[in-house]
Every structure is written in C-alpha cells, then in structure tokens.
Image (tube, rainbow, N blue to C red):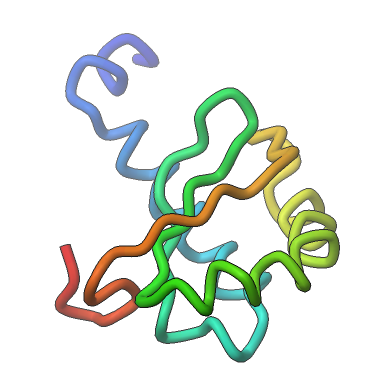
Length: 95
C-alpha cells in the first residue's frame, strides 16, 4: 500500500497539506495571508512571502515558529526556515 501511495504521489499531497495547515497555525499573525509553506528538504522548510520586508520580519519570529512547527510536525524534523519572495504568496488563488 505504501508503494502505491508513493507511486501515485498521494503521500506527498497529504504531507504538503499537513505542512500548509501547520504553517497557518504556527506562523506569526503578521505573516498570515502573506506567506505560504513550501516543501521540507533536509530539515529546512521553504516559505514563500509576498515581499522582502517579510523575510526580515520572519527572522525575528524564527525561533518561536520553529518550536511550534516542531510540536505540530515532529515527523518532519524541521530545523530551519528559508524564506523566498514570491508574488501572490499566501493568497487562496496562488499556485
């Protein structure tokens, strides 16, 4: 069964949905609606934000957010967050 889920990509879809939900819970209020979680690679969560000032703001909140994400997603082993600017990040119609 696990091979079938992996082959169809369903397991990745479920994982990315869990990461997105955890990000919405763990992210600071100032970033909600203006950021979205990407993939976790080697313990680093990629987060997309709408503009560069939010990258700097994330630096102020990083320690607290990492602690919350660790509690919400212990299986992901998230140890760091890397922010990138992407127009439209966090909007419901964003890719």
